[in-house]
Length: 262
Ligand code: NAP
Image (cartoon, rainbow, N blue to C red; front, side, top):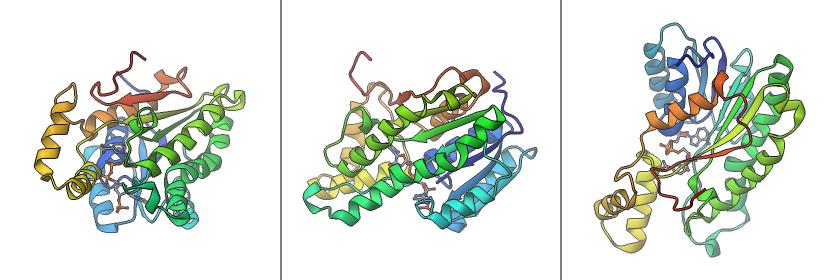
């Protein structure tokens, strides 16, 4: 299927590895020019080189910086001539017990997983509407539908974003101008983030990393973890011309882990 987005410009945040990189790869394969960001310059430049090699027709720009800061966002936005596609992403907050989190911990989580995506949408969606095409995909978490006890910072911040997006996406001045905003909810995907949260669980419980890793894999109906390539393909579809009638949705990619009918 031709996704109809070749030549568009995408800003893919937090994309030197993991799910963000998977999204950038899928978009680049479709001929989309990308600006990718991450804090670590070395891994970011390696990712940019890989993306360039995937499709020599596209432009790939790498902007090192912290997307949760105003300077990081300004630099990322300035690198693209226009943003037709915005993929919001940042690192997830740490696991733990809410009794240990102070105001600063909450503000960091809100900045990364709620306020930064809102700021970037604020900077881009009206321009998208004026041009008559725009796609926003927010990478959130399956924890929005089924909260994970130890990830309270993530549960709280991402659910705030989800509520905000539910209202924004339905504004006729966006939806009526071919601007869609959807959230992609990852269940367990085999990335560094999953390794970090598994290592934290191992430390808390005293069980080995491998035992937890295998048990969680087997507990998933698909009997495996998801891949960044699968995640990226779903993201690229949401960014395609074919997904123009789909907005304000929360799309779960979890191998069937969520046990509900809907
Ligand atoms: P990952 O493999 O750890 O990759 C995270 C990427 O984000 C890296 O490129 C990292 O590079 C970049 N990054 C982190 N903080 C950043 C910041 N402040 N500014 C710019 N770039 C930043 O993580 P992932 O598994 O792809 O997860 C992506 C998101 O999905 C996270 O929010 C995670 O919590 C959520 N999620 C993941 C899973 C899963 O199973 N993998 C499940 C549910 C939710 P630098 O460190 O160099 O900045």
